[in-house]
Amino acid sequence: MDVERTMQFILDQQAATAVKLDHVAERLDRLTERQDKTDRQIAAIQKLILAGMKMMVKRDKVTDARINALVDAQQRSERKLDRLIEALLGRGRNGRNRH
Image (tube, rainbow, N blue to C red; front, top):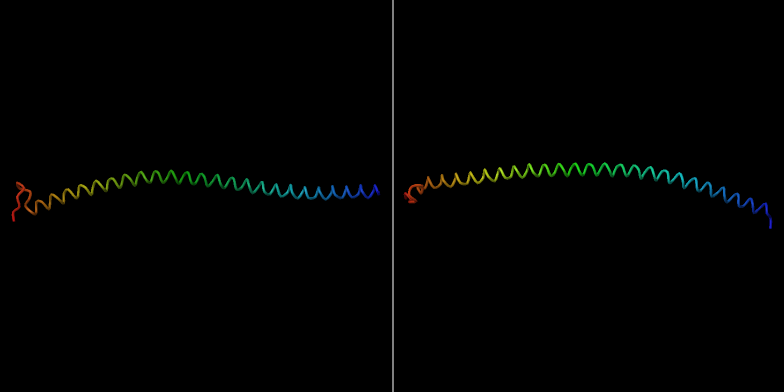
């Protein structure tokens, strides 16, 4: 058994392993940077979604108020139209029809 060759083999293997480990460390650093960037993007998207949801709730409240106002106006218009039709048909006096 050649001790020098065995030692050289071990040293070569250690050197190769060290190079591979350096590559793995570099890749891990890049992946960590990408993950940090992705985490920041996700946090920004979450803030946008939350702000959008708040805007939708506020808009829905305004829309509901406007719809309620339209319903009230429509009901008033219907009552006025009913009174006008009754007046035109002569039913406004003692419940009798003029015709």
